[in-house]
Image (cartoon, rainbow, N blue to C red; front, side):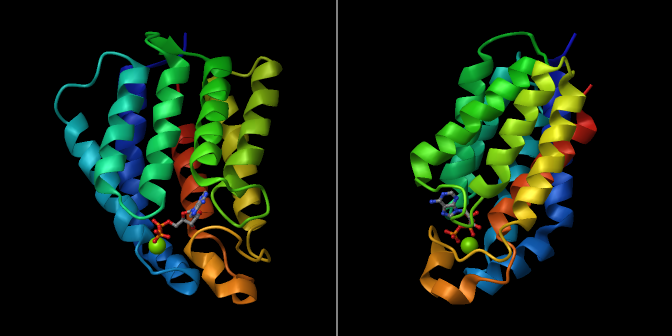
Amino acid sequence: MGCTATTVASAMRAVAVVVAEHRDELIRLDREIGDGDHGENMTRGFTALAAKLDGDVPASPGAVLRLAATTLISTVGGAAGPLYGTAFLRAATSVGDAAAIDGPAVAAALRAALEGVVARGKAEVGDKTMVDALTPAVAAAESAAASGAGVADVLRAAADAAELGADSTVPMVARKGRASYLGERSAGHLDPGARSTSLLLRTFAGRAR
Ligand code: ADP
Ligand code: MG
């Protein structure tokens, strides 16, 4: 057992709803240390993805992840579009064309996603980016998977760790992305990309079967 394409597609549709619900929050966070477009960018991207998934659902979880990647790359824009696009593309490659994905496959896909984000954006933990949410999420997912957890528990562990990781960005001084232009003044604010990463993982966890 594990997650099929239908489950992954419904998780993506749920993300579109959640991101839209948090649009204003993400805009406000990005206004504080960036240009204020993150909520709009993410809503545009996932709404476009949800619309594509209203037609035929792709044949495998990997194909859904690949569709997410290409859609986000072409619609999100900003720094986050290519970063999330790369993350989903690497995750798609990691799961291959399997008909269903289990706990270890999800942990491996998250690891691949993180590696893609780091390869593309060159951020490290402590730079005040989505990497600060995703890195602990991957570690938590891997340890849950190693102790036999299924997809839902692996994703729940990842989401819990991502929330703490996102919170950890508040005191940080940004060293990557637009927020780094603010220098010391970026401290005291939650990073919008770390926040959106934790929202995505929490939603995936809620939808996993
Ligand atoms: P932009 O900064 O171009 O307006 P967004 O507002 O959509 O793009 O996304 C900003 C988020 O992207 C940041 O909050 C941060 O989490 C993430 N980000 C920016 N640069 C990088 C990077 N080099 N590596 C990882 N994440 C990054
Ligand atoms: Mg922005």
